[in-house]
Image (cartoon, rainbow, N blue to C red; front, side):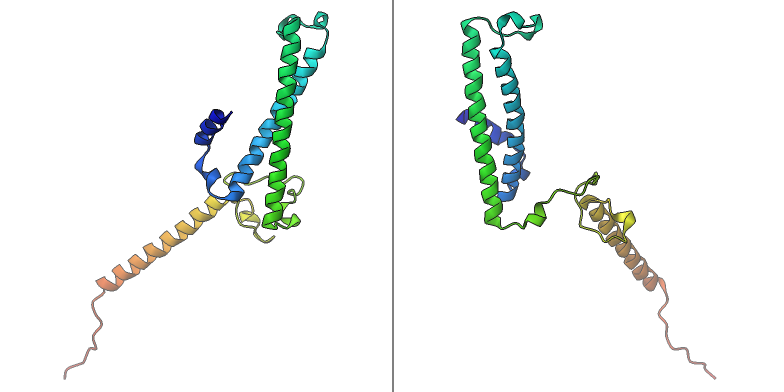
Length: 174
């Protein structure tokens, strides 16, 4: 419903509203949730089609006419979800086509790939084995540390230069 969408829009982390691509990624995560719900509805609908005599006591399935009504409700929601999933996927594909993203840019990572724990970093050359699993945050911390070291050394040099007596030419008086 519109009210649920507005309430949900208020709950969205602002990072997902920063760009069209971010909104598309968020929409795809919602599709993933919808697929989970779709599978649940399919399983539930199938269980409603079974004979009531085969129900387990802990199934909590409705009986009689109520069972048919519940089946109709769940199948209706199933097809609504399926339609929304199809629309969202088509929208995402249209976005990818519009953005002219190269297929090579959206390939899956190699088998066994484990993403860094602190986020995605810049691609590293093969020679940087120690740095290959570092994320963007780690790279920023290293940059800030080196900038801090440079600033400290600069202050130390200025302090040393200020504490030295000025070198004047010493003339030997006769």
